[in-house]
Image 1 (cartoon, rainbow, N blue to C red):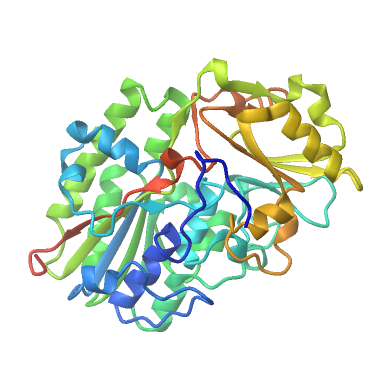
Image 2 (spheres, rainbow, N blue to C red):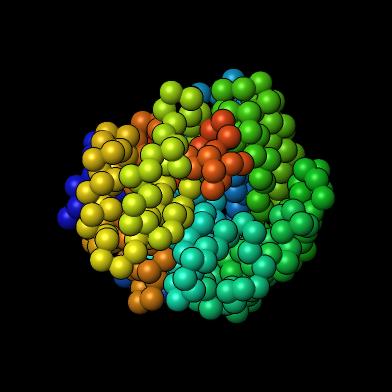
Amino acid sequence: MTTLPPDLHRPAYGTASLADVLPGVAAALGVPLERDEFPADPLGLHTVLAGARRVAVLLVDGLGADLVRQHAHLAPTLASLAAPVGDLSAPCPSTTPVSLASLATGMPPGSHGVLGFVTAVPGQEGRTLTHTQWTDDPDPDLWQPRPTVFARAEAAGVPATVVAPYAFARSGLTRAVYRGATYAGTVGAGDLSAAVLHALSASPRALVYAYIADLDLTGHVRGVDSDGWRAQLQLIDRQVEQLVAGLPADAALLITADHGMLDVPAATRLDIDAVPELGDGVALLAGEPRARYVHTVPGAAADVLDRWREVLGERAWVVGRDDAVAGGMFGPVDDGMADRIGDVVALARGTWALTATEREPGPSRLAAYHGSLTATELAIPLLCATGSGLS
């Protein structure tokens, strides 16, 4: 198996990953779920949630487990909640579209096909897909073909509701990862809290999923070591307090995240566009600053791999696609999905970021990033609160 450097870690697919959360919730709600080679409920959530007939899962974008522990004094509600199974692992790359698809399908990235923030579109030379700016091309039902846990819950008679910003309601990513659920679009933090509690109370059994984006955005723009990020965390803690206080007696609330995040100082940024040899033999650059996919011109893959390894050195773990797949970075990779991964994969180490200031001027100016496989980026919490009838 492919050997990782000591500071990077292989995601714990099928044992303790984000993809294992909703299958466990489904098991607790009596929804049958097949997951190919993976167990139905490796986290034992049917025991953790015993007696719950309604379950809400709140995903706070960017709320890494290390960040929760470091700022416990600012988030007393989060700090007080039970962590019944310890930290979970985000997928590879540790980035939002990949994580949301893994959560929603209960499968690792190689199975659902959302394999990066920006990926190549196979068969369309030079074209990339930015998953957060996606509408209807490629067709979301074909690009991400796996059934969602929400659709399976609905088929089993358990109403499924997604509570997320109204602006995302018609996006391609929403259709790809939330199909099968009723989408309750929200216009603010208070509206989200009210919508979650309403959906939990609307039927005798319920699966509710909610998404909060603001912490991640604040971290990217201001940094996680900023007054703005800390103030945003305090607001989210208050929102969680409202949700816990309003839980129906037979309901449970799980809180998790899609990835952690780390600040990247100027001293640990390498601008790919400023190093001409990194462009030799490269047809397309995809991914993001801490998780790069490099697609090469025909016949150049081996030379590009050697060149990127030589230039990047200890800044990143650089590996060919076949070795990354064989090493289990993406879980089992279904037919037709591998071409969305670069011929060369470069995952940043330490606090390095592989920016591209000419091609990606906006993303290259951010203060904090994620996407690689360091412990801080991978470790995400799974916190639990229960209604009065389950305490």
